[in-house]
Length: 62
Image 1: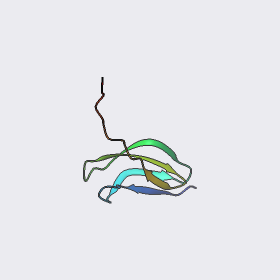
Image 2: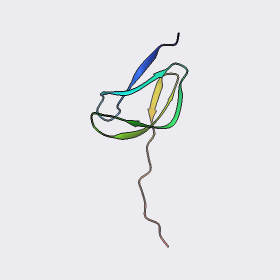
Image 3: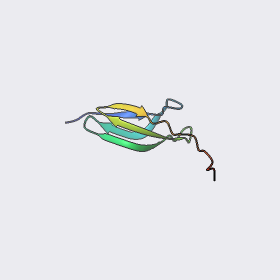
């Protein structure tokens, strides 16, 4: 049986409602934290979670 672990919020550090197992792969997953109400894009592979930095919104020049 595969064991899993809870994903912790990268902003405030509290436990989220999402659990991943060893064989779980996430790409551009929107992780929501119920405590700080923040949504963060993450990637996960082999129980290693990394935060995806979003580029700042820029205005279009004509």
